Image (cartoon, rainbow, N blue to C red; front, side, top):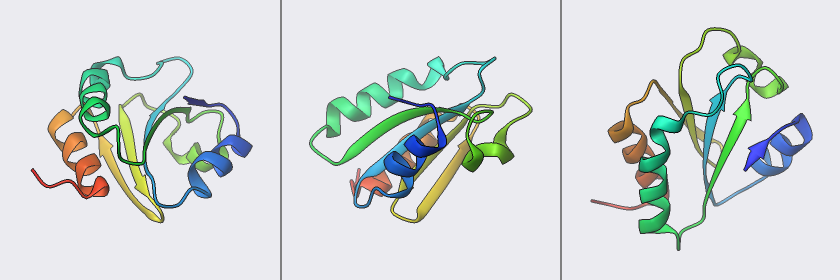
Amino acid sequence: MAITDNDAWTEEIEKVRGATLVVDVHQNWTGPCVAAQSTLKKIVFDHGDKPLKMFTADASKLTALHDYAGPCEPLFMVIKDDDRVEIKGLDAPKLRAAILEKLGVKE
């Protein structure tokens, strides 16, 4: 699901409690990071019974992501309640580990 404005960011990210949220932060000229899609799809397939939501968000359009606009570098945020982990670059094992940790899944 794409988060396209500040109100959606507040409703879908800031106000949500108890769910693990994964946000693919990009900019309008780069597009969402396709390279991580297989990792994310596998996690959803394996753990779809857990409270897990995935989003894309354009850093150049959201006040909350203003600091991330500029140079193009893949960035994923894994958020649960007020705890946020940022994974820069396309490090699929690190992204997977962060998501599973927030879900409370031990491998």
